[in-house]
Length: 350
Image (cartoon, rainbow, N blue to C red; front, side):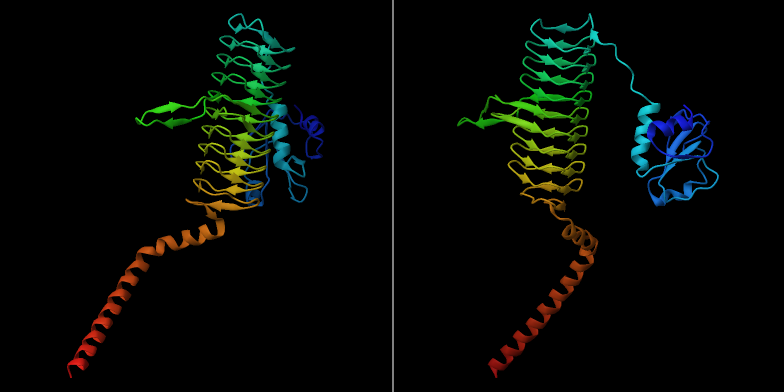
C-alpha cells in the first residue's frame, strides 16, 4: 500500500514521498525498507536518525528532517490502526465443519464458523459472525453473542452467558465449578454444589489458560471491556467492573467485588470477600487482605499505600546495619544499668 493511501485511511497528514510502498509495521530498532514505525515518547527521539523505516508516525510537535512521516495526535493508536490495515486477520469461511458435532436444539446465527472437532451442546445459542476454532467444547444452555472469537481448546460450561465481541484465547475454562467444600466431623470434605453461572459482558478479552469459576449461587460476572491476561484465576461469585485490567497469574478468591477501571499487576493475590473500589492500582505481586477504597494505589504483602510501601523498600536494605547499631546501643544501655546498680549497691552498703 502506498504511503498516501495509508495516510488517507488513517486520516493523518503525511510529509515526504507519498508513492512509497508500505508493506508492514515494525519497531523502531528492527524496522527496514517497506516498514512503518512510530515514536510516542520523547526518550525515543534519538532513534529518529538511526531507524531504517520507510515512514514514521510522529506527533505534530516533533520536528523531523529528511524522513517520510505521518502526523498523529496519538501515534501509538495510529500505529495500532495501521497494523490492523496492513496485517488483517485471516478470513474464516462461515459454516459448520463436517467434523463438528452440533446439537439439533442449538441455535446458530448467520455467518457463524464452527470448526472441526467442536462440541456444541443442547440449547446453545451462538450469535452472528462468531468464530469458533477447532476442539472447543460448549456445554448445554450456553449463550454466546455476536462477533465473538473463541480459540482452540476452550471449554465453556453449562449456563454460561457471553456477550458480543468477546475474545477467549486457547485453553481458557469458563464456568468450571467453584472451589467449595465443608469439612465433616470425620475430617472428610463434602463438595458444595455449584449451581450458579458465569456472565461475561461485551468486549471482554480472556487470556490463555485462564479459569473463571461459576458461582455457588447467583453469578460470577466480568464487566464489559475488561481485559484478562493468561493464567488468571477468578473464583466463584467474583464481580469485576467494567474496563479493568488483570495481568498474568493474578488470583482472586471467592465473592470479591472489584470496581471499574481497576489495574492489577502480575501475580497479585486477593483474599475472599474483599471489596476494591473504582480506579484502584495494585502493583505486581501484592497481597490484598482488606478492602481498598476507590482511587488508591497499593503495593506489597500485605498491601499498603504505595508511598508507605516505597518508604519501607528504601529502609529494608538498611535493616542489617540498623540492627547492629541497635545491638550496640542495647549493650551500652545494659552496661550503664549495671554500673548504676553497682553504685546503688555500694551506697546501700555504706
